[in-house]
Amino acid sequence: MNVLEQVIENKYAIYNGDSCEIVRAIPDNSIHYTIFSPPFASLYTYSNSDRDMGNSKGDDEFYNHFIFLAKELYRVTMPGRLLSFHCMDLPLMKERDGVIGLKDFPAIIRNIFEDCGFIYHSKVTIWKNPVTEMQRTKALGLLHKQIRKDSAMNRQGIPDYIVTMRKPGDNPERISHTPETFPVDVWQNYASPVWMDIRQSDTLQKKSARDDKDERHICPLQLEVIQRCVELWTNPNDIVLDPFVGIGSVPYTAVKMGRRGIGVELKESYYKQAVNNLEIAVKGDVMECPVGQMSIEDFLTANPA
Image 1 (cartoon, one colour):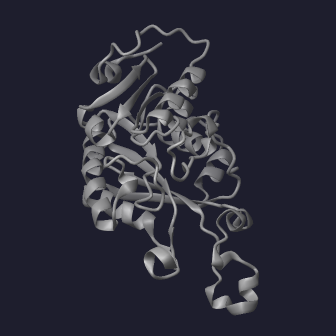
Image 2 (cartoon, helix red, strand yellow; image 1 turned 90 degrees about the vertical axis):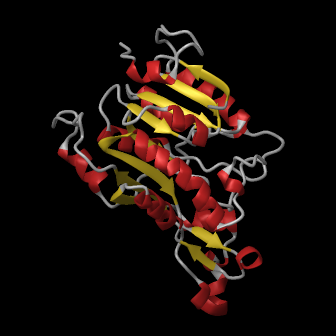
């Protein structure tokens, strides 16, 4: 396991390294839930590392790289438990792809996980403001002036999706909620196939994670989205994994909700910010375990108060 740096406490473990290598060290059937935003193939570049899946030359190279990790995620997931990924359709660009259109990236990722044995469990659409997208991307299909020119090229905005996969088998640790902790109105909102009330700005502060070599930008996962998924699909003290942890949004939310978090990040500046954010999440709590002295196995079997 090639770990550049790590911080391990009794409530979270964060690793600076390649998730393909680090996840291999996690024992079988030990992760209760995984949620993450995958690298968007070659659309966004997060670093110049050859280990960065965002540097894939094409879909085939991305598939061959990502399926290695997907197989490991299947292995470490408890039977009957879930894995969710956050992504969107990817725009095809004339100068890069030869055409203007969309690529069904969620389906590509879903197919990879299905090839590894996961079952397609559910999908929720996260509404995004098309005006904001138009202002940010200047996409031809969203421009009002295109209506006057040729509306055959106009399209709808691109939402985010949370696609959830389930590992076959019986769940050994059932997730049971009471009407008091999970009222009917909350469930009805969570059960909606479209979440209209997610604020796009509801993310961890990310400016401090940038450095001079950043080529594009990070794609943050909203904290409310993580919170809903963790609340619905985990028990207190469950272990929540993010193999592309970025600045730490998933373990941050998990720890704040009484779960334990594991995160892996290849980019050093993001990793350092993730550590800072996790320290904020546990501020005021007693840290009983020394930093960097606990193995993955010890962390997974720990029972923090």
